[in-house]
Image 1 (cartoon, rainbow, N blue to C red):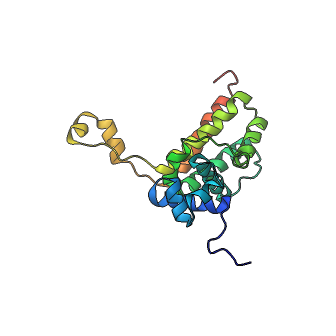
Image 2: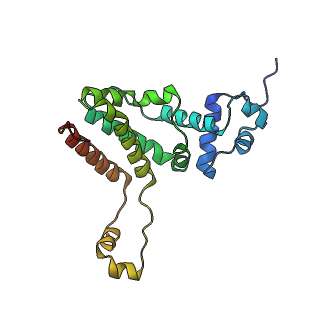
Image 3: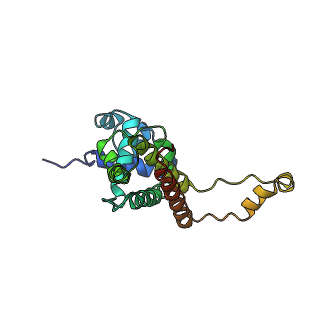
Length: 201
């Protein structure tokens, strides 16, 4: 049997193409994705139900590319490991992040990435009702770190009337590695304070 001129579609190939497309254009549209893959839109729809599924596949593919997060000795290590790895991953694909914020994680293989942290938090004595809040906070931190500081508003009027803000802008230097370690220390310190006060939030 002759080999097809176009490689057969697969979840991995679709996800890789989607990541490439959004890295270049900032969006994923099914017609453009089909064109990028060199197939007809009908062929694409025979493998995925729509754009939300493509985004879910892209998220899974990115998490699969991330340095593995294995079992941690304690919750602090689990939090630090996940925050650092997510930040590094997201920083490589900043343009896809807004798309992730519009779709929930639905794949069990994607959710499995977070399991070591859930387990470490339980072992560390965090309440069960706090677990998803902690993981969400780590995700939010990684999203923000990857995107960096927004361009500051500045004018002569602002310099004259807002000296503290002006000082913060004048001394602002954003380095991803430094910012990540600052965030790791801040998150772990905050969680330690909550953990040592069981009646807290």
